[in-house]
Length: 206
Image (tube, rainbow, N blue to C red; front, side):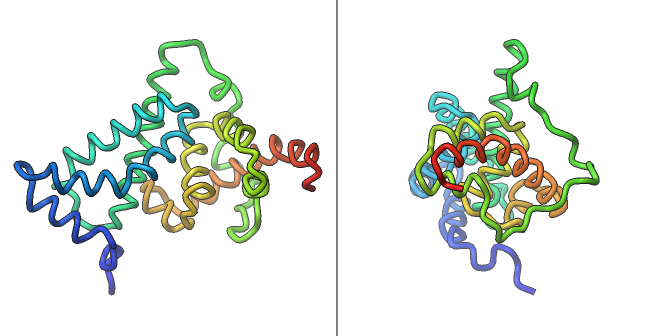
């Protein structure tokens, strides 16, 4: 059976980085940085909600990658590992910030738990309010809605709708079950539907 990383487009570069570490890592890692800097920053920005925090989270992400690239064992695609680190770095940064201030709107607007039996998984092929809004470039409103999600729902929403990952790819990237992916996306879809449906109505898009 073919391994998840057998056709990994980054495999050759990662092997070169591992072979060069630690003395000659800088040159190979610059290639790695150039290949992923935009994707990592985009994930971090969508989760943190502002440029300064996104830069800090992206810096944390690449710091971890630099220190740990030698330990990557190709049990998944390298991109999945990068996304997991970027999501966790962004969530950790927001949690540290939350501990230094009063409870945020994000913390006060939590929806019901993942095990709620009344939630149905979102149809993977169905267009969502966030996709509809994004197609007409309502960027500010979309980002604000994402920022008000809980950290875990925010991360999974970014990977699904902004990075275009499949349910299976999200499951691998975040190290969670497929059922958890579907549950969190269902909750995120409900929350975004409540916020973005009136927005679409105002713009005559529904």
